[in-house]
Image (cartoon, rainbow, N blue to C red):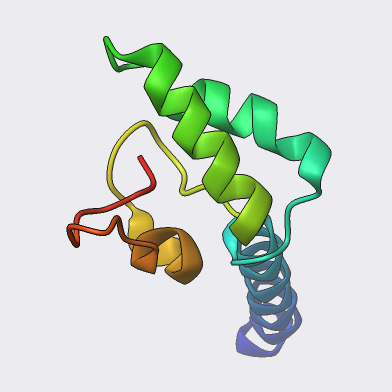
Length: 95
């Protein structure tokens, strides 16, 4: 019985590794195409009441970094370029 579970466990582990690679590729820095910026930024800015400036800066940041963090807020650690780009005053440039 235990010998029948080993191939299943190995297959499950390989599937988990493959899925984590796909997820990492989807959100890692520099992986987006420029055409992907608008839909990603539209979702990123969907929860704010300041949509126009959010979209302007999100699109600007995406064009430079080719990355938009997942979700509508936070998660900037996923995109180091997006996270580290600051204004002259030292505040975050990217929403």
